[in-house]
Amino acid sequence: MTSERKIKANRANARASTGPKTAHGRSHAARNAVRHALSLPVYADPVWSEEVESLTRQIIGTDADPEKQQLARRIAEAQVDLRRVRSARHQLLSRALSDPDYESEATLRKKAGLIIGCFRRIGPSAPMPDNVMEFLQSKPEGPCKFATILADKTRQLLALDRYERRALSRRKFAIREFDIGTP
Image 1 (cartoon, rainbow, N blue to C red):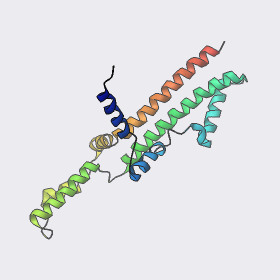
Image 2 (image 1 turned 90 degrees about the vertical axis):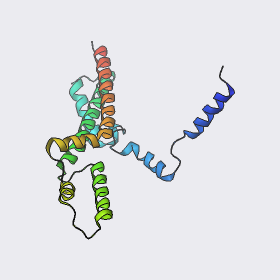
Image 3 (image 1 turned 45 degrees about the horizontal axis):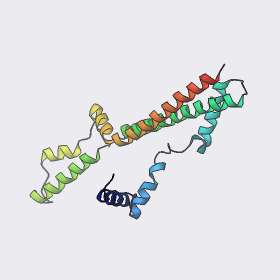
Image 4 (image 1 turned 90 degrees about the horizontal axis):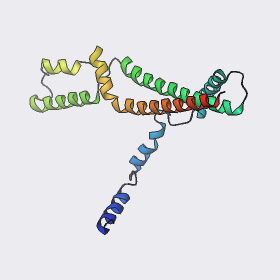
């Protein structure tokens, strides 16, 4: 039996957990689904929907059985979703890697803090020390740049990974059903 105190606490928690309260928070939450458009169905984009139909025809061949076509279409939809996710991941990483001036937000904050600290200590008209100038002008390169990008984009990459796992699972189950449905 749940106590009255526990019920009141649960109700208070439920009232506090109703989503964003501010206009900024609501607008941010509203943009979640369209950040990379992967939550939209493939038929929302004519290019992807044509690819689904083409792939369906490749899977099914000349068989016109509507049930079999539907099963093949489910496989094709999942496969096209996989392509969409992998394309989004490729674009995310290649955009960051091709930026010659790429720096992480954390490094930019460190550099800004260093500049402000130097201005406070030695004054705005005094020249910056050489080691400070060297750090301010440094940019990540090679493996260090790649590691920085991966660290910065971890949240986005994890989200893309979840979309990919869902698409792989949908494809696996669609293939199983297709195989069962074939004589």
